[in-house]
Length: 89
Image 1 (tube, rainbow, N blue to C red):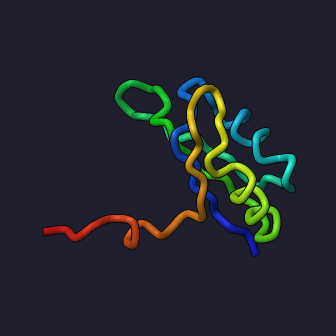
Image 2 (cartoon, rainbow, N blue to C red):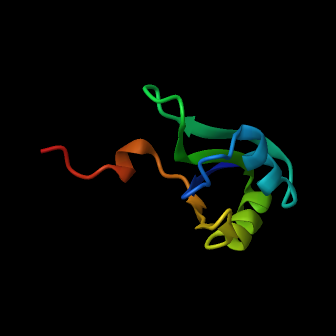
Image 3 (cartoon, rainbow, N blue to C red):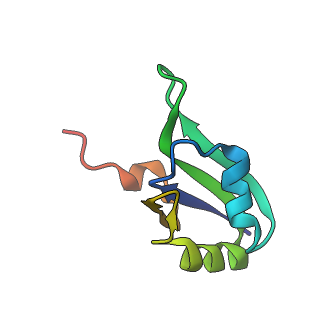
């Protein structure tokens, strides 16, 4: 099984390739995507990485809170969209 990992507080200069390289030392990266703002065409400062369960666990533990480009990363298992959003009143 593979896991989707949320990576927040990324340096704005990071692209998909740099994000993948950051996680590659922990195992095979099946996909890495930095989320881009449609209007400005710039990074929103977060992204997602897809890895096998074991590698994902190691990467989350090692990289959560790590300082990269003067920004402290927030790394955790991504949640389905419905669980992340608050109530829609």
